[in-house]
Length: 267
Ligand SMILES: Cc1cc2nc3c(=O)[nH]c(=O)nc-3n(C[C@H](O)[C@H](O)[C@H](O)COP(=O)(O)O)c2cc1C
Image 1 (cartoon, protein in one colour):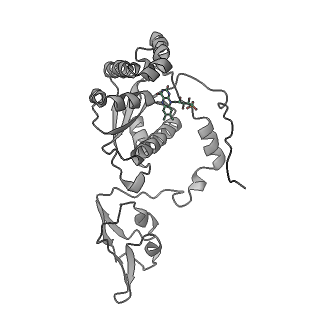
Image 2: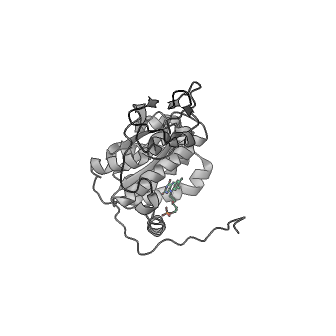
Image 3: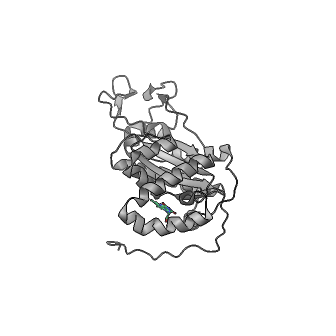
C-alpha cells in the first residue's frame, strides 16, 4: 500500500498537491511535481488523491477512490436539518424482530464503518459478526457470569440481568439476530476512540437502512476483565467494541428529551 508517484500524462502542474501535503514539491529544473517520502511520513490518508483535479496521483493497493455527486460539497448531499433530525431520531434499540439481516445489508453497514477515520489513519481494526443464536447465547452467559463476579457490576446490573432473563434467551443482547465486533490489535488509548467512531458510523448507517442497533459496553467490560471470553466470539484483538443489530420491533413518536449542556467560552 503506497503512493507511488505522479502520472505525468495527466499532471498539469496545478500544484494543488503542494498545498495538500508536504511530501509533494515542485522541481524548478524539470518543471515537474515530485513526490518524495524518504522518512516514511505518509500515513496513506489519501487526501492528495482526493484533491488532485486530474486524478494524477499514482497509488497501489490503497483501494478505489470514488467520484460521486456531492463529493466536493458534502453539505449539498445532506442538510444540517436532515442530519440533526436523523441524529435526534437515533435510538438504542432493544427489541428486535425475529428476522436475520440480509448479508448484503450487513455489508453496507461494514462499508460505512470502513470509511470511519482513525488516528494517524492506522486502520488496524478488524470486523466480525456473530449470527448463530447458540453462539450468542454462550457468549451472553459467560459475559453475565464474568460481570456478576464484580461487586459494583453485581449491585448495578444483577437484578436487571435477572429480569431481562425472563424476557430474552440472551438478555444482554436482547435476542438481536447479530452481534458485531470491532477489535484492534493495539492497546493505545486512541484505539477506543477509533473503535467508537467506527461503531458510530456503522450504527448511523444501519439506521439509514431501517435497522436498529445498540452499543454493548457490557461485553466490552467483561472482555477487559477476562480476555479469554474473546475466544467465544473468535476475536483476539486487545481492544474491542461491540454492538447488536437487527430489524427494530419498536416505534418512536418523538425524540428523547436531552437537556442542553452548558458551553463554556461560547460568545
Ligand atoms: C459506549 C456505550 C456503551 C453502551 N453500553 C450499553 C450496554 O451495555 N447495554 C445497553 O443496553 N445499552 C448500552 N448503551 C446504550 C445507552 O444506554 C444509551 O445510548 C443511552 O441510554 C441513551 O439512549 P439512546 O441511545 O436511545 O439515546 C451504551 C451506549 C454507549 C454510547
